Amino acid sequence: MKEFLVPDHLVETPGKTGLIWYQNDSDLNKGRVNFTQFVFSFLLEGRKELFAPDGFVELGKDEFVLIGSATCLMTERRSPITESYQSVLFTFSQTVLADFKFKHREKISSRAGAMSASVLKFPHDPFTRNFVHSLQILGRHHQHSLYEVKLEELLLYLLHEYPTVLQTFLSAHEWNRELELRKIVENNISSNLSIEELAFLCNMSPSTFKRHFTRQYQQPPQRWIAGKRLDLAQYWNAEGKRPKEIYAELGYTTLSNFIRAYKKHFGVSTRAHRNELL
Image 1 (cartoon, helix red, strand yellow):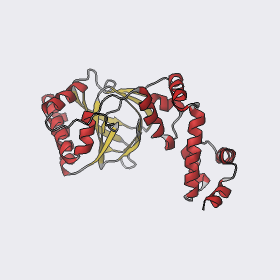
Image 2: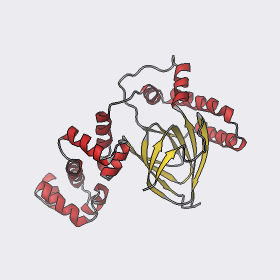
Image 3: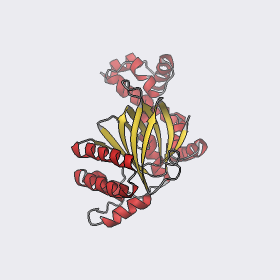
Image 4: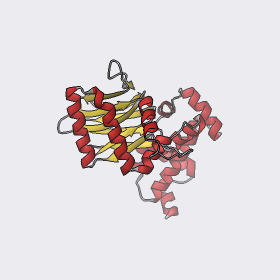
């Protein structure tokens, strides 16, 4: 699996702020991305999927994201029309964010203890569409001195339009490792991520992840996650989803493996169990 540092792998010398014009002419499936700065990502062509510490985010051309997580698993899908994936990445450092928070401290309330989502998704509106267009103009003329001004403009606009979300993001503090692990695991129960991928999102090696997981849940991760996914399968089964619609979403390679695991866990087949639950 490919692993990237952003923006470090995309520019020679990352600055405090930066604009990156990114294009990929082949699909990327669950690339491991370590973000060394905060990033606004605006799609121009294609679709983006993110497995972040707090769950799954899918992004189209009518939306954009602010990525505040250190790690993500990223999938990039090319447009079926242009056969290309293109995006604008607006990057900025922790120092720039701290300067913004200090300058506008009277507008930013303290929310100690609040946990911000690691990826914030916003819908495009006329202002943000024009904003992206202005970035495209700046990028062509390399007006780097204006990047911080443009970032301030966007953050102030989002702070006005989405005060609760941005206030929480701006005032978020560091959480301890055990709480972060629980958040990542429990928000990705239905995401069909492997132990290695969950460990990556936790910024841990697989062995360290397994050790911390077992201490938290008193079970090895494979056993605990398998049980939770089968509990989810039970819910979906009761809702009328067929086994062939369920098994792949929960990480089973074949339908027969899923049916055997379900019967072993609950003592009855999916069909019998659905009849009992109805």
